[in-house]
Amino acid sequence: MVRTHRLLLASFALAAALGAVPLRAAAKDLCVQDSDGGALKFRKVASLKKPGSMVALHGLLVLSVLERGVTEGVDGPGEGGEGEGPGVRTAPVVGTAVTLPDGSVKVGIHELGEAVVGGLSTATASLVTDDELTGTGAVDFDGDTVQDVPYSWTAVDCDTVDALVGF
Image (tube, rainbow, N blue to C red; front, side):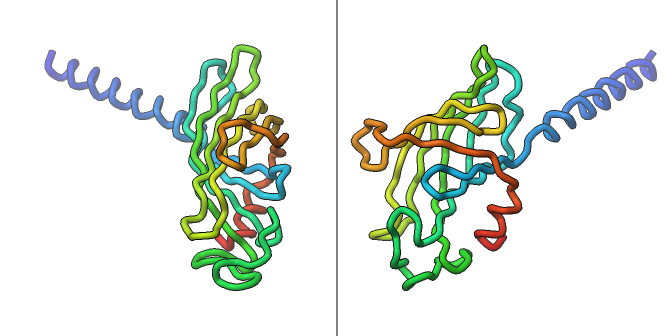
């Protein structure tokens, strides 16, 4: 009897371990090119295929120093900061994505700036996308909480974004 219980418990433990593997495997990196000339990489994004799915977005915005009118970097012209390739500026991005009943994905993000005086500003954006984050919306660059500039994303290969930053 004791042996049967142990075998049963071991079977449940094995089934639980095997059942958890697809959930971890479903998370993947997603990358997009934005309409403002930047690229964003979001790490370990859970699947957005099922309506009602809500996932946290954690990522990095990558801009060349020529984008957004930035011509002089903090480290001098055409130079990125530590860990950044030449001509590249980066800022962390956080947000949330939720899959709506019609299969579209509503995304809200906040760009946190690059942590230097005179660096990239903070910004917020909301978009309606597909499950690969291709879609359109609007962005607020001036912090007045009114999204006043059209904004869009197009899915790209993450190797492209990694090459820009030098990962």
